[in-house]
Length: 428
Image 1 (tube, helix red, strand yellow):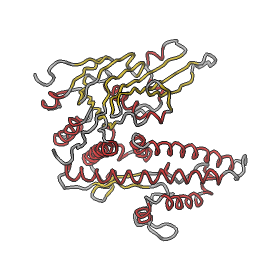
Image 2 (cartoon, helix red, strand yellow; image 1 turned 90 degrees about the vertical axis):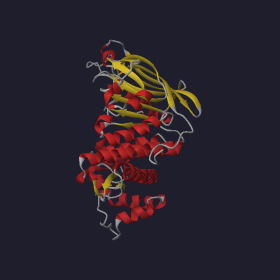
Image 3 (cartoon, rainbow, N blue to C red; image 1 turned 90 degrees about the horizontal axis):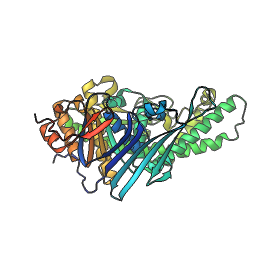
């Protein structure tokens, strides 16, 4: 087996059954799922992507496509006159700890008193039929998703890159997820207080309390993100250099903590005349030192923050970037180089997650095989065939090798209906 392929096969995590009610274009679906790779094929707009979205949503409580969770409820159900509409996503999972059931409910209640017909929306999470907090659903099911638009992690906004860090870490590290959640709450409270102070509606007496909490929680988030990026960067570099470019190119991940008001270059200095990059490299794992720097940055930015009514430094301002041969991949890399770097990132994510948990995550690949050349397609499918469970969507199964098709289960999707395809796809 090649060095860059998966090397962990001790424990198995897989979904044995998926149930959807009023989710996207699925009014009702009950589907038994096998281990190994499954090819989900059919024409466009039939529901292939929606299946992968459902699995991803159960694992992360986030949608990779919807701006609002309410959009996930079946459109036909939303046209009915029922006072309460419930979308349900249920997965029965086999794990190293045994079999468990996880569920997400999307509940829309119409308000008869409102002329516009709008109502309230809420979510409920359940594990083995017991209600839990949303964050307590995380970790029961772990996934890595491949999308054609993943290249936006390179070219898109810092918010997208922060979201990637948080979703990946929250599947593995519940302490990080709780810390991040608490940080965001304190940030919201501090920003509200800043606005009240600026408007003369509140005194500054409470501000030090919120600032202290913000610095304490934010420093933990910064240090954990920095460690994660460092760990992921080593694997990304190895896969990219050894497997994807045959030693021709190097790629690095560079973490940019939100402790500075601007994004300085590596040689820029802070107010003490010390290069910020050198300081961060030395202290990024020292929570006390990071907290001290964070506190100084908050104090320095107070006047500006008061004027704008928002905190301008902290992990909510973090970013990270790809460097290809030492240069910004977003600015100088070709589209092909960017796709190659993203492929290395996703493969590294699989290996990192497997190493952290001892279980290979479920792989979700939505129409990405068509985006790759023959060499990179073959490398990716080597990962897929060694996964405990993987789901791939495609409109044309012919793009897959005969060897892959022989070893994959096949499902045909037509107009929100899914059936096991027993035909000999690719053998005509």
